[in-house]
Length: 116
Image (cartoon, rainbow, N blue to C red; front, side):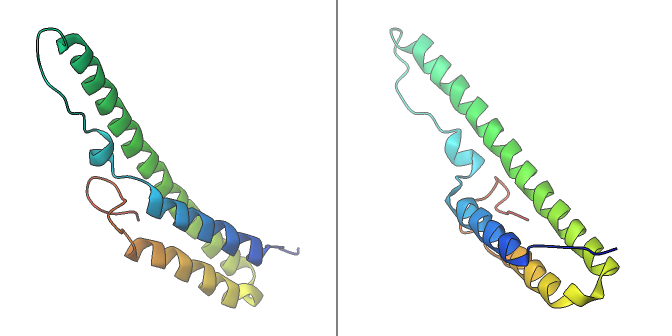
């Protein structure tokens, strides 16, 4: 059985994901709403605060999905490497890209300050 993996395509896609992760805001940043609390604006202010909280929660969930996707990519790459030792150099490259993502949080990560 032959296993084919487009290493260049995987590298390009991982680098794209890493760039986009750096631009992704932290959930706490998204959940911020500001404004007065006069009687006239209280209803609007409450709606804005609710929307900001919902956006923060959505952002937190996206970060969790990105983290689990990265873990799934790592597991798949390691499984392929176990099945075909001829791609070990490519596997090391992909895993090092994933490791570099873990080291770069750049202030654009989840509330606890990390992308895995």
